[in-house]
Image (cartoon, rainbow, N blue to C red; front, side):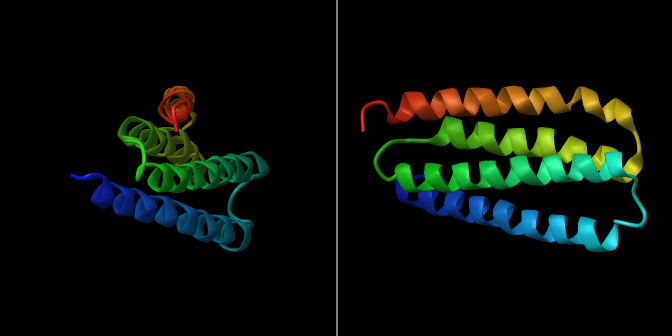
Length: 124
């Protein structure tokens, strides 16, 4: 995949992650408010926060990738969103707190993604 196609793809993925944060946040506060306890709603809030923040990071990767390849950073952000946020959403909806062992793996992906991001933009 060339840089132009990668840029478009990652911009779309970043936009979709940001879009779904609005949908998840609205659904949680209106549709799930009476069904979940405060702890579960807190997990969803945390997931939405990190997903929106890293969705914007993906958009930055897509914009910068026209000048510098951002494949590693974008991949780490996507995996981080899936593992970190996904595990929080799953815990909130199922009550299975054993899924919490996955959450730190997503956090490590976020950290590595930011390190890769900084490394990639150092020479712009």
